Length: 112
Image (cartoon, rainbow, N blue to C red; front, top):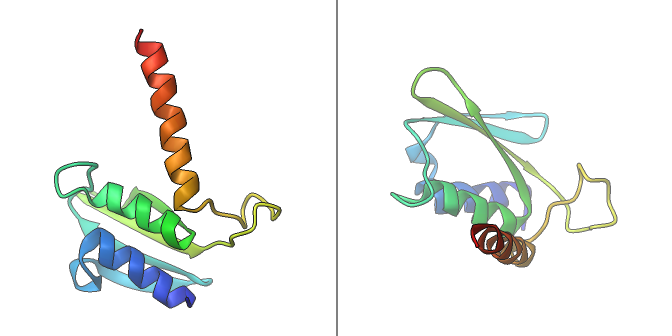
């Protein structure tokens, strides 16, 4: 899968396509765009879909403020190689599932 195809997978799954976000530009191999409003883990679950899609295609996503009522997103491709430098590697969706299970176990233990 090309870098551009990976970016498309993430935006299509999280936001329903590029036509639902604005200001798409490419900067040093990464894609940058913004959207009005917010992203959540449940209502519309854009944030959850963003995280899962990023792990599925091993891309880093950064979310930052872009002024009042706007979020800016940066997506950059990473590699499937745990031996690489921390800034080069990105865990896959299986790794995300394992991280989720471990966090849930810790939270349940803390809640006791």
